[in-house]
Each structure stands twice: as C-alpha cells, then as structure tokens.
Image 1: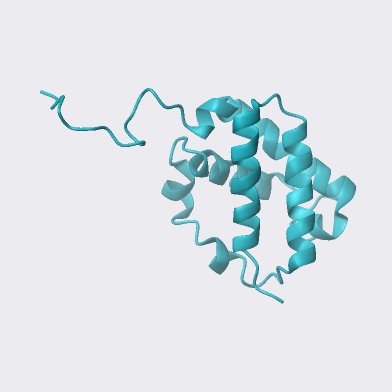
Image 2: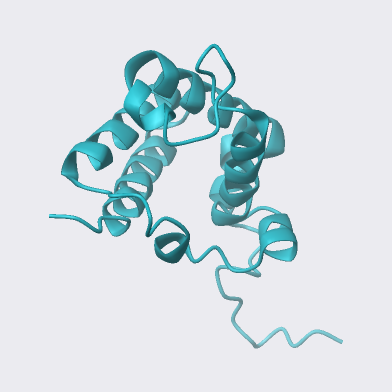
Length: 143
C-alpha cells in the first residue's frame, strides 16, 4: 500500500510532465533529430562530415537513430539508449573529435534551427535552449 505521507520526487510525480512528454514523445524527438541533421547538412557541412554520410552529404541513418535514442532518454523518455549502447559517456565517445568554440556554435545553431521548426511552448523552448547549450558546452575539449 502506498505511503501517502511520503513526498514524491520529480521523477515519480505524475503531475509534472517530463520534457520528453512536453515535446510530444518519440515522434517529436524523431522530427527534431531529422531537422537537426538536415540543417547540419545545409548550414554546417564540416560538422556533418564528422559523421558517416551518404553520397549526397546526408548524415546516414545509424548516427541519426543513435542520437535520437540518446535524446529520448536524455529528455526523460524510455531508457532504450542505455540498454543498447550503455552509459552515454559523451565526452569519452567524442574525445577523438576536436570540439572547440566554433564547433559548439555550429552545433547549437543547428539545434536551435531545428527547435525553431517545432511548435513549443515558451517555457519548454527556454528550458531546451538552456539544456542543449549546456550539453554542447560540456563537450568542449579544445581551446
């Protein structure tokens, strides 16, 4: 029987929606991922070239799906990424890529463009802008 005296934390509270849910779930994360990588190809080809690409310069499906799974989990959705790929260990997995201020700027610009195409409430958008910028800056490994 549940203990009604015990306060619920943010993870177990049903009254507070997770960013994953507020965004629109898996379909919305898929759309965001597609728009992010499409923008990368259009506006930041050097960034796109860091990934496996098809002959037209489009980032291939494998990195797209892996990033999509990461985003689903990172935003509070099902923990599929970790069950398939293990702990994200983002800095370790990207250590071979020189991440400097220019790369961070390019990545953030692509993500902000992708978010611009989504119908998001102002509070959710502000939250995601901050979280994605923090994530990108966390990856910096070059002066």
